[in-house]
Length: 212
Image (tube, rainbow, N blue to C red; front, side, top):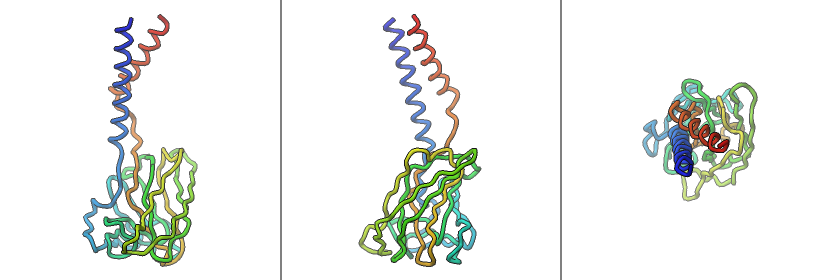
């Protein structure tokens, strides 16, 4: 009986580990580094044009109150800088998965240019309908390229999963330009049949041993 119990525990442990590995394999850190923007330069795709990074599309949103509805993939040429490339926008920006799959979001880094830091809102459009919202207030430190640490890390709470898109809205004229970097996301995928089989076998065995 003890031998069977140990085997079942091993199966359950293996299935849990396999699920954890599967989840971590679906993680992506969107840092725009794969776009090849050299230090001291920026990529300005143009009005209404998006970029693809780490399997996700980063695009200017529909809110064009500033009249500059474009992106700035900046690596220390203009605006807040953390030593690497970041995705900038004047009013709002939208993140979606290439291919339209759902995903979860955990955190992101944020900064804005001098005089432009203000509270902003993030909206998630949920798979199957509905929305989720979060508001953030930056610390106001925005010295553009300089010795201060401009970027802050903001984290989401529960419920930010099964998303079709995420929108950052930081409306407010030319000086409202903001930058997003290091977006931590997870693709929502169905576990492999082998992993589910391990988990099912272990749970069934535990149930059988309890009945005995």
